[in-house]
Amino acid sequence: MINAGRVGDRIAHVVSEVLAPAVLVAALLVAVGWHAGEAPGVSRWWGLPGAVFAAVIPLGYVLHGVRTGRLTDHHIPDRAARRVPLLFGVGSLSAGLVLMVLLGAPREVLALLVAGGLGLVVFALVTHWWKMSIHAGVAAGALATMTAIYGPPALLGAPLVVLGGWARVRLTAHTPAQVVVGALAGAIVAGTVFPALR
Image (cartoon, rainbow, N blue to C red; front, side, top):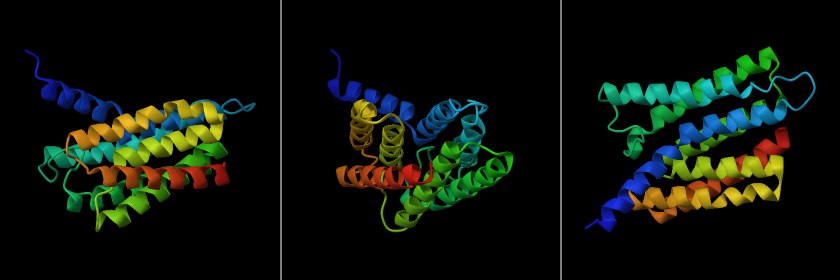
């Protein structure tokens, strides 16, 4: 007989990995870069270097921490252990932003990097006291960004934000409140900063 609880846990694990912050950030930067490339003379691939600095390098830092035993898991369940990786992410993203400004990256990609950096700062500050869900924050921020670009049809992606939040609660990685507040923080930062700067 199939154990429904185990099936639910496995689904939640898969959802957590597929909708992990690094995955969503990389995909979002590629998507925004592709959209920015609709302008004449602009490469559609500007999101790739952004993804390297905003997602690949920070994830590499976290995975190195797991391998060396400094971190227990790539999702960093211990709240106190999150601050340094978050600040490292801010540093990596900031370096990428400076480089891409100097290289003449399109405004939309730069706006997304700024919004992402501010979001990381907010989460790093709050993490000192409370463990907001970064999964939910990035998912909701991605939805807000896509809505700013494509309008209301992008809201069809809202169930993915809910699904990701369910997975984090199911795995007892976060409480419902931590998921909701994380999602609100991500949506507010991305939904205000990105449209203002793009």
